[in-house]
Length: 112
Image (cartoon, rainbow, N blue to C red; front, top):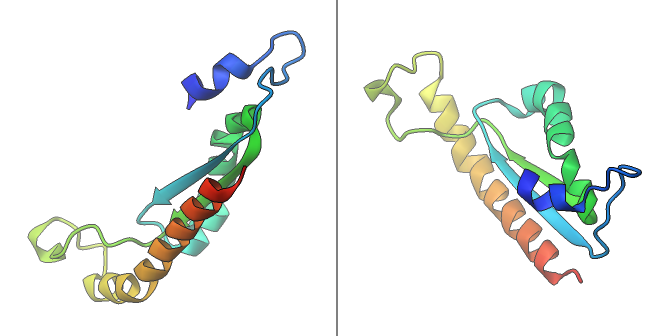
């Protein structure tokens, strides 16, 4: 991220010297559920990816939350997670997250 935005930074006025426009899509996956992400991670992610504003476009962040890490939780030291709940959430939500990621990519690719 730094290498894509740093060259556009002016130390004269801390504005962008880049005259083009590049929109950026960020896709995050995590164990945190949506509520936890919204309360704790979302503000941090918006701050973390803030340097992309030097590219003069918009930055969209898509979070896929409460993800399924492994197919069989019993094989790992993961007792804090409810495997049945994780699998049910994955079956219902992950296809929606995939579609949202596809739509994000399509939207960014079609903009000029």
